[in-house]
Image (tube, rainbow, N blue to C red; front, side):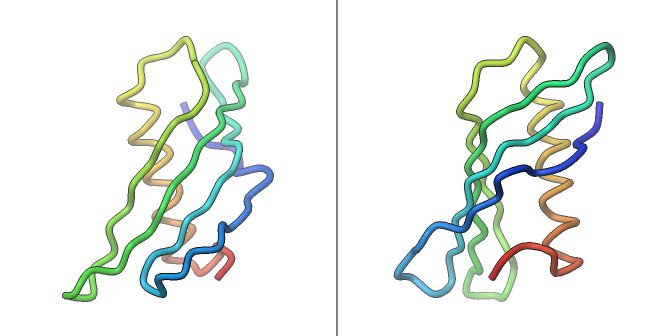
Length: 87
């Protein structure tokens, strides 16, 4: 399984400057099919300068959630490190 892309990626307005919230549709390439999963995630900078990622899956999916969460969070972390998320 892998994440193909985050489609319809939109940043939500948050008044707190150290939290960024996003909503998107994760396009997943599962073993035998492709699935679109609605997600919301946030990136929060803590007081030590580390980034904490949270993920909420809004769609029902017929696949184990733990590997999906792990894969999506890794993909989001890579996008953040590469600077490809909207600011």
